[in-house]
Amino acid sequence: MVLETGSAVLMPWLSQVKSVLEAWYPGVQQGPALAALLFGDADPSGHLPVTFPQSTADLPTAGSAAQNPGVFANGSTVRPAGDRTSIRQVDYTEGLESGHSWYDAQGIAPLFPFGYGLSYTTFTADHLQLTPTTVQDTKPIRVRFKLTNTGQRAGTQVEQVYLTLPASSGEPPKRLVGWARVTLDPGRSQNVEVVIDPTSADHPLSYYDSGSQSWVTPSGTYAVSLGSSVDNIDQTDTITVHPSGSANNGK
Image 1: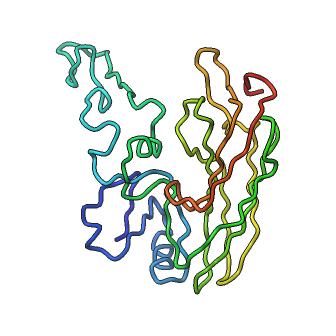
Image 2: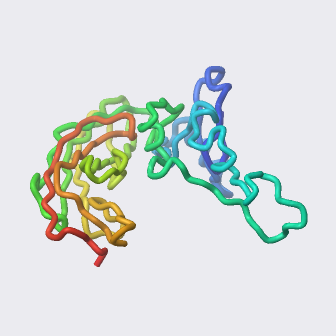
Image 3: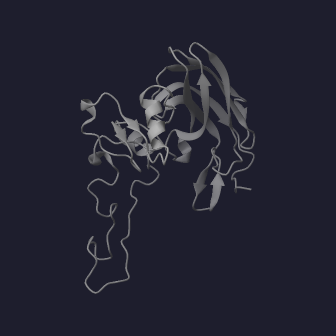
């Protein structure tokens, strides 16, 4: 089954097909690209940027008109008679638990998790090493590991690095902070490094405090996880962060 979709879709027919290839919007060369993948001339190496749910009942918006599609001031999804200016208001009651964080927090197993992707070969990732293990919030963190192609043909793997902030931050677990795309022949290994830069625009070690209107880096223990998806973690280790200041304003 080849899917050309713009987002996640339900697959009640999944057990009736041997494989699924999510092609998204492949463009004018979609024919040669799909043929190369289906006939094995090329190795699939994409990983999902979204979570695929098992049913709409698993979504954070399930059963709530205020969350989806939103309601007008009278609480209805139908525009009041004579009103041509007001718009629906959407209530995001899931808060920070959006995307894959929702499924983690609710204990819901998705159909396919964020970061999921298969290949015509197999890989293992081990020998995780974090340097340094005790840092200030401005010092880069080097995540090193060994990736091995354990299958019978050449292939490409996208190994992902996730970070979990201390519980005091109130942040959901396992935010994606980096990845490495590596192509290996069968039986070959490669030492890989991914750098987490605390000063980058996405503030990997921080959360936004709406009260102070600033980025805050909490002091404490951070979990660094290595995996082929958010739900398939190969190894986890920890670092200790001692912020250079109580807040990081993004400068």
